[in-house]
Length: 93
Length: 399
Image (cartoon, rainbow over all chains, first blue to last red):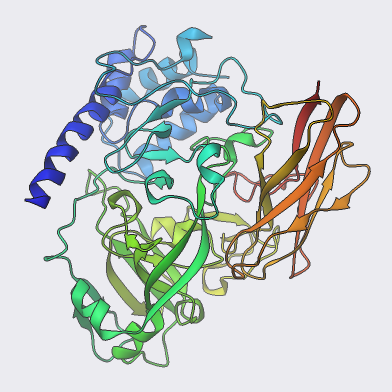
């Protein structure tokens, strides 16, 4: 009985937290959907506004390449520059 | 800038959240471009400050850091990778092996609880990046305020006793620890850490299954996690499943590339087998303190008694003194220290505030450890934003 109750609660709470994550909207501009889909594969998009005050074009470039080289993010070569351009245009300090 | 803020839509009825103000401390008012702070409840947790959803990184609000033991449901949550399985205790096994043990073993939770002496100890669990968000100049990473830390009584068995069951060989150099959490993609480095063999065999290094007398919460590492008192939380591997003893330095990403500080820049234990001339793993927690009352936005009343209280701690020598200044650091006086709960615990301090005159009080607090370390006036800048133990300041007003 107890595990069932715990499981039920977990689903409700997780559902709302998932909904909260899914409601994060990046700034609507060219490159948004590509950036959201690519970065959002492995982590929530709140990492982007959280770090924006610290970031520059150069540091976004470094960060995107770190995701690819160190963390194995599957980014198509032709998508790398548009993602960096979008982040640098809208999420820098 | 409003456009830079993340925002939430959807049903507020099912979600415990709200904007939070004033929790970051008066010394560092949030610039208007900061993302809004949201209070959100994960399963089994009360609403905490959300830093990121996935992986979940949730910070304990200041109001929940006032108790001597941080409540389990308020304890901060920190993950690197997003796949966090719900572990069924009956099927959970801890595998202990590696090339430097003679007899690998596998233990159920019942084996672990039955087979070894139980130990309880109070200890600070503090993220290496606690207060990264208060660094100046700013550095990238999870922008933690003061609450990527907590204090709990941890109950478990000594890692040493478990390792001895396996007959550790004389060539053992490091002990590698892995938990059940993992990355979504197989090519992402799994979160694994290592400890020097001496630290693994230290009598205070535990495999804990209880926190404050209750089973570990899911988001704090159920059913068992490592407890390395005095060392930063990066070594306190959650959902522990594998322990390997080996004769070589572990070469995983989370040791070789992450959680490193400039060699020689900070005090603390050395991790020789992982050290290079340039960088070395972060190890011990530095001497530090936290003001819990008055709150950063508190207004003191003329002639009404007021007290400054908070916590002080270090990496395992204990606290010898906490000094308070009310004139911005020109003059210092000793605060009264509360009972010593143990050298890995935090220690309360209290100091009466003079409200006989109106006007500003420029509070500063600095702790000194029994090891002779004292909180510095300036940050030691380092690329990952670790070890922020700068002297605290708090601007108060007596009205």
